[in-house]
Length: 317
Image (cartoon, rainbow, N blue to C red):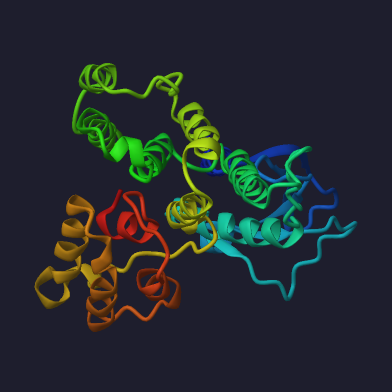
């Protein structure tokens, strides 16, 4: 396989893992600088969202440039455009292409209005609870192929820790902790099954991560208060925030000041001490981090859990 085909195949696999599929390939005639145009479609949007990747080969610098366009053009003229350069280490440029596609998709998709179910209009509490769970289920469907099995399992665990009857039963908590360890690859599946068998969680239908997440959300509609349901929305934003804020990690943040940032992040993750995230933000600033998305996320008052995108970024998970 040639280098060019290897690069295109790797990019196609990367996009597929992140919720985009290629619909069509076009090879513009005329021998111009544009060699290929890919039409790609988002699999994670509530409506059809398409974009175009325009490839310009640059043999003099041993690489290509890839330009992301939201609209189709009849002539792909390139003299003034800015694009993502894919050189010898072309995989390093894939996140920038995905970030541009994500920005385009988020700009195109409007948030749907979540109507309460019929018959609930007479009870404001029921209406509010139904709306929150409907919104959460819609978000789950949109993120189904974008989040990994590990994040889905940690989302389930974070939700279960907010169910009063789960927290009150030690066997249920043991099952939650076993699933967290299994999500991080620390225990085999047989230990998870043993802990789940001893727990009182019969409404979890299977060991498939997304099915478990859907079951937890449906259970939340009748088992927890609207305030707790709102916290589940905040947890999902905490764990899926990297999709809207793709941030590269600078290794210098982890090395400075004796590695205090890495040590703090590891302690917060292991001990569930998410109240210490503002302290982590201060340590990041002292280590030279000036990224507003990271610092604001650590200091915001919302819910945090294992799978928090900032902690995963710092810990390499």
